[in-house]
Image (cartoon, rainbow, N blue to C red; front, side, top):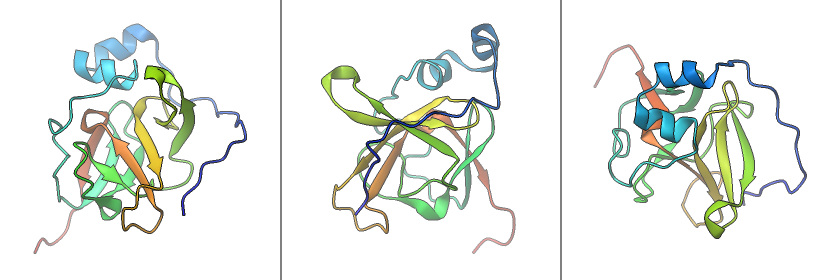
Length: 149
């Protein structure tokens, strides 16, 4: 069963640091609203919700590798879902008490952009019993090169 640490963790400093003006220049208004202001795209509207393309999902803001397509699964929640990040240090998880509920926010460890939230104990048949519910607009998919079947 997946579980979350209740211990407060010190977040590492972001490796990519930009001013608010630089982020606004680089990102579209929708990307900025989700990635830099912890917004959420509407369910079932993102380009990767139903994608089956094999590859690596990267942070749209900084290009850091976050998730592999092999860990993506059908959760039917309206956003791409993954059962584990690419590496333990690829994302930061922190408690989010906004909107009157307790959730665990997922951030890119490299630039601290908002990606989505992670949930546990929902009963999905995945190896971790975790669902990283990630906004498509927070990601860009780098397809694997090589033969396709």
